[in-house]
Amino acid sequence: MRSTGGFHGRRIQKTGGSTFIVSLPKNWVVSRGLGSGDVLLFRPAADGSLAVYPEAATPTGETAPRVVLVDNQMDDEHLVRRLIAEYIAGSPLLSIRTPGRMSPRTRDVVRSFAQRMIGPEILEETAESVVLQDVVGANPLPLPSVIRRMHQMVRAMQADAMTALREHDLSIAKDVVERDWEVDRLHWFLEKQVTSALRDSRVLTSLGLSLPDCSTYLLASRVLERIADHAVRIAETVALIEKERIPAELVADLDQLAGRAAQALADALDSLDRRDIATANAVIDTAEKLGRDRDRILRAVTTKRGRLAVGLAYVLESLERSAFYASDLAEIAINHAVESPPEPPASARPASPAAQPTGA
Image (tube, rainbow, N blue to C red; front, side):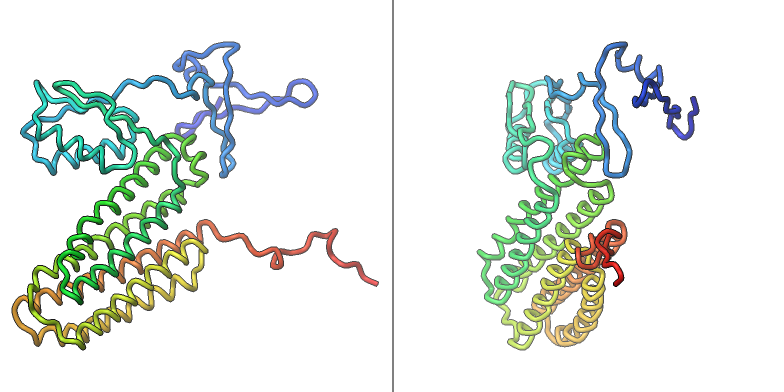
């Protein structure tokens, strides 16, 4: 036996006419309570590796809940952040407990969290605890579908934020701010899926993705979440500007800039889906040009005064940042294309010897 870097080496042996066997490390067998006659399951991975699982470990049985101790005096935001972290960690059962009786405020925060996230449902409540169960499971939605859904939501938020600014509509602006949670929860859901895949190769296999794929989609999700934050910032500018009138020429410039930023994001996602390096490079070039155009518009904004100048400067910055986040996504797409190049079309593949024409 050889042992290097945490890996145990075993020589393949041949027994009988066509059977190959390999021995197992004794420590691994004993630590899992296995013995002669027990069944092992094998799962081949796309990278050529082979995962080994004891048969008893594969069914989903009763799981003890993970206990999360919190304090009734904890700040609401701090409690939500802790619950999000526990959610991403992926425990199927969470028991949120307080020393003594749980206060109504703490209980309301836990209930609101469960209602707004994907998966957690209240399984049980006692005077001092709330038990949450993840009813969604490990693989309810493919990660590329989550990314596409996030993009649809982000693009709609961008468009509505600009409409709210153009028409000074506080109700549309408020709706954009409230929809940010929908993007956040999809991002946290995707992060939970990736975390589970990194921890358990069975989950990775069920997702049908490689580890580099998971990393790529997690980075893309974070980019989309950041762009949604900038849509919220534009929407919040509506209240800041109040009743100040935005000059028509500035409105036209901002709308044009917003349209280019939104198109850059759409093109970046297309380049990610198709592993299209040329399109990704075009997105990066567009973002750099948009940054230069932003400087030109900023000079016009600085001639204004008070709230209007401050608000428009915020809008310009958010549009520029959105375009550069699209550029970041294009760079992610280039890296992904190099890591996992697309399959060439059938017409471009070399013909097999049998299919090649023979000479006369």
